[in-house]
Length: 117
Image (cartoon, rainbow, N blue to C red; front, side, top):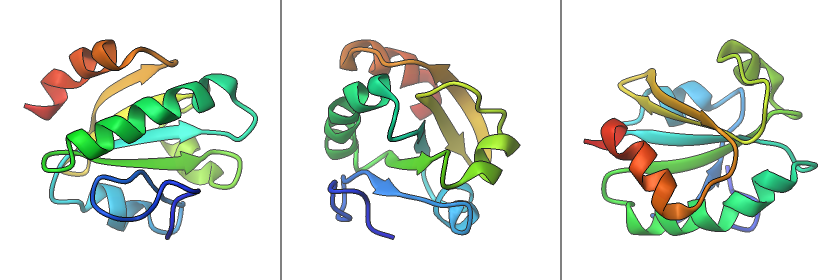
């Protein structure tokens, strides 16, 4: 499914749904960073350009996707997402890292380092 204005090519942030989450995230052959987001969330909009940069720069080792919690409540509920943005890294079908809130790119990459190596 196409992302919201972010493109669908390699290194783009694509949109996932409850219907395709298992295929696009859990069955992915590499780590996936999921941004649980909502249109009404200012910090979610603030971190969007940072995640787009990371998606481009780390495309060879990380897939970055977004899931709108208002339109896809089942997945958000399954993973206990209560605040936005929640960033969760999945590896081999399991969540291996989770953080809440917007942060600078350098700090986010530091937080993700263990989950990506």
